[in-house]
Image (cartoon, rainbow, N blue to C red; front, side, top):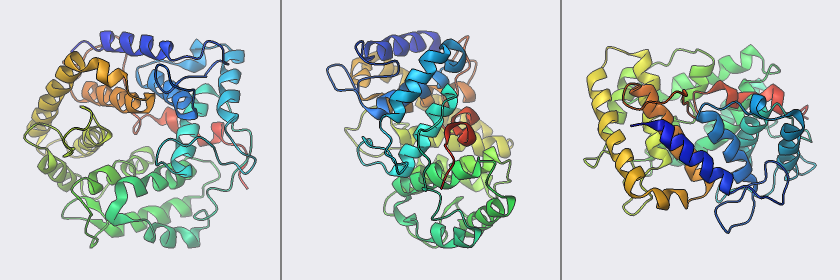
Length: 337
């Protein structure tokens, strides 16, 4: 599949959502919809995943304008208004760090979002209270909270060690899922949750204890229709599929001799499904909010990483989990309180 054409179409579509009367960085949630915070964040991230470098492509004044627009949604306590759908303040925080870090801009106000878990002695208790049974959404708290804090120079090594010790101790070594001994509410929870936790192992080059079992578990979840999401009527490419592709890439790189052919086959079959959806249901996909398109861009990025000879472009695509440019906490964050 030629991703150059996909990139050109997505770029043109995002440009059509730009608020012509607003500041640089002001984007609508779809044609005919209002401007919103997440649309502004999503466009930064999508352009980055497609190989762009907005820090170089934009002038300093344009980057500052974009950052100012994002910060116009921040309250003096450091939290943000206009949170997308059901997401949490910590999810929004992670998104803002990703966008402002890429732009080289900083939040206007300091925040105290890390306070509940920043002291080493609070690590275990905070992790224990996460809803591990329904961790797909609950893990956003880890991703936008503990992970972002861990990428800060202010984060001490002993704190990171405490986090990894807890995660390692509570990983089910037979499945590669969290948390050991806690049943999940449905088939999607472990995969959707793990994808928001695994990047902390990748970014800190920490050994993950059970890559082979994780591969087994992700492959076992793939449905006969090649998808991982078992929700009929859902739009044709979901974040759970991105999660599956990322988990397979992460674990496959750690255990390259474990079921490599089956991983490629699973990814290839799903990739063919994505190509069909892009060709036949493109208007439906483009009608979605840019936050859904962010998941689509990351899915294409992971397909290229898995099968670079089959998903081709002159640009190197990435994804929202592995790309360290989206985790520049010190660049994007005002001094925390």
